[in-house]
Image (cartoon, rainbow, N blue to C red; front, side, top):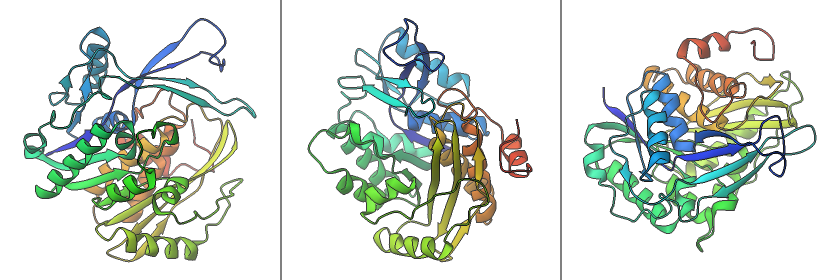
Length: 347
């Protein structure tokens, strides 16, 4: 079975225990994270052969990051080593009316200082079937962006399927290019596209459809989504499947979540249940869990779009209950959750 390749930055996440603010206390808890690394771990947990490509710092912290990935079965043989430090981000958990917060410390990290040409994509893709990347990598630095586009072009040349997550992070964009222009270009290469409702709006310029679900009884406007994705297909004609994660944050610990899939070959829209999730344990990596589950499902059940969407949303919903950045769940757990009764996740 050929490998799935993901490309991005693995980072150290630091947060305070017990819902403390970053300015409180003296103790930090550490986890490894980063969107594309999260996707790789989820895919490995679901039984897929997956390789993570990155540039990781030399030294004990870089060693520990790679050991973390290998612990879950991710191949790190294509990772290059260099630079002095791993990128870091500080995460402050939401509580009641207080929103969560992220402070990045990625500038001049080992991945930030990646130079175009360091990664030999022609060799890496020789035994691969699918390449996954995201807009986060394009936002880190101009060299990281150029390396991403080199990878996309080589993946197309070798006939790989391409998965792109829009993953707009406004605080990362700082080297002079407009996010819309770069993301729009990235999305032209994709066979499958992911994003939440706000990310689709940033990338396309088309306003998103409001989602105001207070519970699982809410009904989506299917006609509006059908029209929306018909327009998106005009913008991104190569794409076969377009996926939108749709969330309403009612409170910091109470979200409603659903998903929409549009198959451009069938010209058909698929919707699924709405999860009413309370309490939220950890919202980080929820979109990455969605991406990984759909990549897995698309390869296992390629002719069943409804099951692929149900499976992906179930995985994403469960991630809200898992601490840390990565969705450490099995295929059986995800399928069991699809058939769980009631609007809330059964724990």
